[in-house]
Image (cartoon, rainbow, N blue to C red; front, top):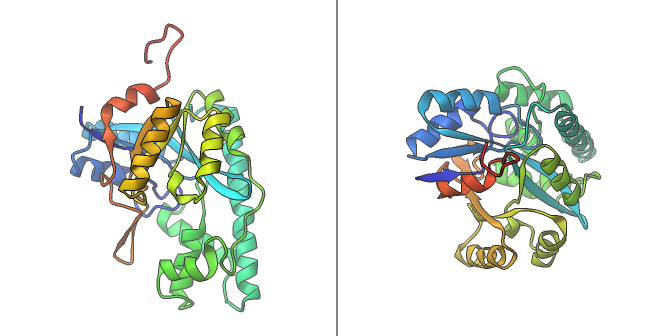
Length: 288
């Protein structure tokens, strides 16, 4: 049935390529399907679906929700949620408002540290990537990092995160967010399937297992650009132990300064057969 990349980002959040471009790259990589999983928004889904139909590539509507558990950022992927549902869209808007607040707090900290930066300049960077519209889209730390590079405050994206934007760095802030359990419930209520994203990035396997055991998450992202063979084997065993759907994806964010973040489209995949487990089902048990 071919291979699928179930984790990619576009200009609807902090990726550098349009939704159409991601689908084109999936076609070029010989994939059967690609998921669009922007942070706290599904604004790129419609464009991707149209391009997928044109190119004969299946597009999986997705999202990556930002949550916090025990002070740790946890990301939950949701697939096939009904992006036209009003309540779901209200909830996504609320999540983006938390991101907006975080951006304001980060910029304030950077100013305190003596950097010449404004929130308006950050939004202008996001506007460049999104084609001049940010409504329903996400502005995030990569846009701040890009502005810091332009201003000569840092030389690379990595330096921007290491010095200012990553957890524990000088300008990092982590405002209150929803708990993963709540995000999982929201995804379910919107008709979608929830997957715990890149567990290897959290550095807390005890918390990961607790979220799996008690939170109702339906799958786990075993294969990810930042997972090594040992991590993949560990999380595959965990998936088998708890009967979870096994997914994987590149977490593609596009290219900056000649470097692809986190991996190229198609660099981490799973068999397309997994789509049958992710698609919503009708009352008679058949896939819709």
